[in-house]
Length: 295
Image 1 (cartoon, rainbow, N blue to C red):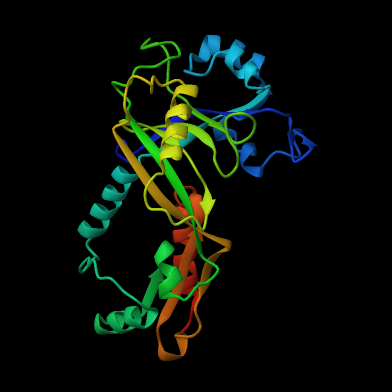
Image 2 (tube, one colour):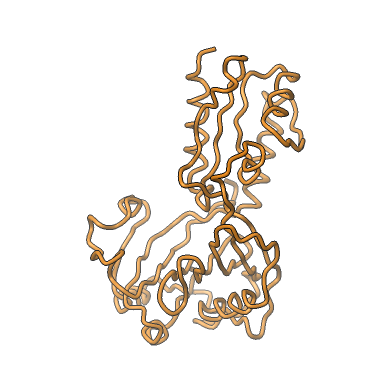
């Protein structure tokens, strides 16, 4: 990954020790928590601060968490992808691969255009990874954009409220999706990524606003302060709005409409906010599916 992926400690704050009213016991935790590489723990806020004597993470003080009503947390180590950097590396790899004939930036308005272009290039397969574009290209009414917003701060210069600039302390990814700080649609989070600190956010289905509303900007500035950035005295360096391609079910399938004419079209989109989590496995499954189709 050439520095595009960083293993980061993450803490997810919870007010209650349950998921939808079910106690957080080993059999009710999400399956991903069983991956030993994550070093997953669920514990009380007091236990987190005892452990932090050793871990030295930049996290809100115990009294701040207790005042906001957070009593429990998950702690784990997760890979964080520096998305712009990784995308450039991936594109460079494709461009420079010995089997790549050319890389175009054509804009397609329909699958028929894609198929026509593929035939002109003497190709017999298309992997459709157009994300939100699939709504119009494939007439996919089920695909919706879940709007996300971010403020970005400079990781090396932004002053911190927790443990100051003490070099012994490490950045952590911090999340709250319930209680005083956040909800599932308007989460409160901070993610260290490459040279930036990302503060969010939102997950708003069918919200098509391209910019960030004034009220949202204030909430992001508040989130930054809550999670330890001195956002009242230092301005964010950039803002970002994006749309997660969401469906009730991921679309990873062969489109049999085109197979009778000798073209294999594999649709591979609809991963919502989990694209960077799933992309390697999704690519492998798409290629396996393509190779399994007999013409």
